[in-house]
Each structure stands twice: as structure tokens, then as C-alpha cells.
Length: 463
Picture 1 (cartoon, one colour):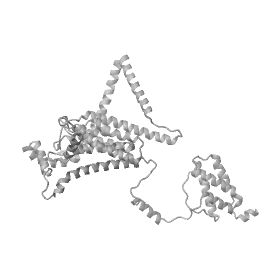
Picture 2 (picture 1 turned 60 degrees about the vertical axis):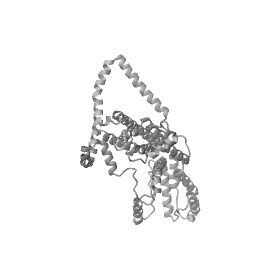
Picture 3 (picture 1 turned 45 degrees about the horizontal axis):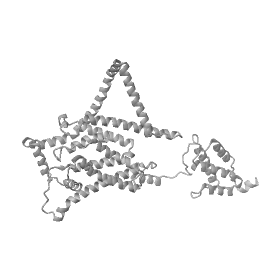
């Protein structure tokens, strides 16, 4: 889906009068390769540092590889060809170097592949919306203009984008359903490649056999069914075209003032000069070229090109490293909330409210639901025990563990030591144990609590 909307935009960027050289075509298979290789590397289960180094090295190597695929290497040696491509990045006298655009897109595709394993439903839906806006904007151009730009086939791009987007959204919904079912049941449900292959091949085989049987036994019926379905198909395509047109007109409404201003400024130039002169005028107007200002020192004159190339490499490395860190942060599924800083406005407000709030008398416990949970039922019994012991003058301090508190209570009321031990053991099981307590444990805890008479131990001994 990402490649389907990026490729038309990329070919528009590579083939316009401001770029040099023009007439370039980036094969779709190479963009898909840059997206899929990071997913395969993550299957190697490398250590984080080694994986980051491997991602960075291969990501930087993808830039000259993209140049070689698009520009071609020719008969020059690899070293001389690479030096020539690096020098071309600073040759702005003929136009903006397309090597910069290719380097930027290759790094973006690489980092998109790194983040692909951590893609969530909101990210996929956001990409679907962005792709729809981009394709709708491209459709604003005239058909004869698009026909002159190599590498653009809007029909293929739209069909690939819609189909891949729908499949992606369906798979995301399926994984969400599986996650909910795994939370409800004890058996683990999952999706494997074998399951997808079997289900997909079975569905395809049923469709092919049904289609073949229909054509063989009742071709007239099939033709009639297709005639019935043709309005529905046309309605679907009409809806997609209407959505794209709506997006296109919305964008046109937003950028219309900018287009009118640019039209008023460029119309006199277009009337007396050709398109090639327009490019020279724009480049000269923004002062792009190889002319160095006279006040620059000779050392800067000799070193600005290597510095520019190193800056491009540093930017690519930073993008790849950041994508890796974002993926690793997203993979930590046990983290419910993340903060960029410990000091946030919401945290400060909540702390101030807690500080200024007047405490009510008594000790508040955690809210429980004893009717639906055996754990909560036993914890509610233990909370009742804590309330009674606090009223009896033996409150539980924060630093005292349940086991130590049970021994403290047994020293105060030795006749009920067995009840204290039972309540403590059941509470520990309900609070920290991996096994859900039974209804018999709940009944035992309530019976032990009902039998407790927390009086003075001397009176209890005499009784």
C-alpha cells in the first residue's frame, strides 16, 4: 500500500523541469524489496546492538544500490562510479540532483520496513488516508501530462492501493479479534503462514472451480449474473472516483490562492520564454549554482562538498536509528503508558489536586467486585479483617508483610492464630497466586472471619 502511493509521487518528483537528470524510472520491485528486507532481518533474532548495526549498514548501502539500479553503472569501475555519484549531489547548476531524491526515498522505504513489524491499526489507517490524499492530488493533473511522465500508471497504482489497503485492514481486524478471543479463553489462537496459505488456496480453488463449472454447465446464467453485478461494480468504482474527486477538489480549494499567485508571477515569463528558460530563471533567481561567494575561504571552498555528503549520510543514519528505536519501543507490549518526561502538566495537576484534597476519615481500600471474582471476594474478607483489627487497636503498618502481621495478631489473640493463618494464606493466594481461588476457599475465608472475636487476650483466655 505504501509503495502504491509513493511511486507516482516519486516519479513526479524525478521528472519535472527543476530536476536533473530527468526521464528516470524506479522499478516497483526495488521499493518492495527495501520494504521487505528489514522484516527478514528481524527474523534472524540478533542482539539489539548487532541488529542496529546491520540495519544501519545495509540501509546506507541501499542508497548507492538505488543509484545503480536507476542510473546504471556502465563501464566505469565501482569506485569511480560512486565518487561520480557523490559529486553529482553537489552539482546544482543544471537542476536539483535526482540522486538526493533517490537517497531520501530509499532511506524512507528502509525505515518504513523497519517499523513494519510494529505497525498497528491506527498506523495502517493513517497510511490509508495519506495515500488517498496523495493519489487524489495526482489525479488533479491532466491525463496527457501524466502520459508523458515515465513510470506512472494510475490505474495500477489505484487498484494496488485499494486492494492492499483493504487486505491490510482486514488482517488487522482479524488479529484484533484473535487477541480478544485469547483474553476470553484459555486456549491460544493464532495466525500462521500455513493457515493463511491453506485458507487462501482453498478460497481461490473454490472460486476457480465454481467459475469453471458455471461457464461449462450454464454460461448464459453466468452472463446474466455478471450483467446483474455490473451496476454494483460500476457503483463501487464511481464511489472511489467520487471520493478521489472530493479529496482533489478539497485540496484545490486549499491551494487555489497559492496557485493564483504563482500563476500571476510566472505568466509573463511563460509568454516570452520556453520551459527551459523558466528553469534557468528559477535556478538563477534562488541563486543555485557552482558560483562560490568571493568572501569564502579556500579551505571552505575545497571542503563544502564532502561536508554536504557527510551530512546526507548522517541524516540517513539518524533516520534509520530512530526508526529502530521507535520499533523497539512499540514492541514493548507490556508498557501501558509511555512518557517523554516524568514532569508533565497532567501529572503536576494530579499531584496538586491530591495535595490540596482533604482526606476523609478512615482508610480507603482498593475497589473490589466480590460478586464476580473469587479473588476480590477473598480480598474483601481480608479488608474487613484489617478494619476490625484497626478498630481493636492493632492496625497494620505499611512496612509489615501479611505473614508478619499474622504473627503479630496471633500474639495478641492466640486463640485465633489458626484463623489468622488461614485468612493470610488465602489472601496471599488471591492477591499473588497464579491460580484462581475456588468457591470453597471463599466460604472458608468468610467462616474464619465470622468466628473471630477480637477482644482482649486476657478476657478471651478466661472465657
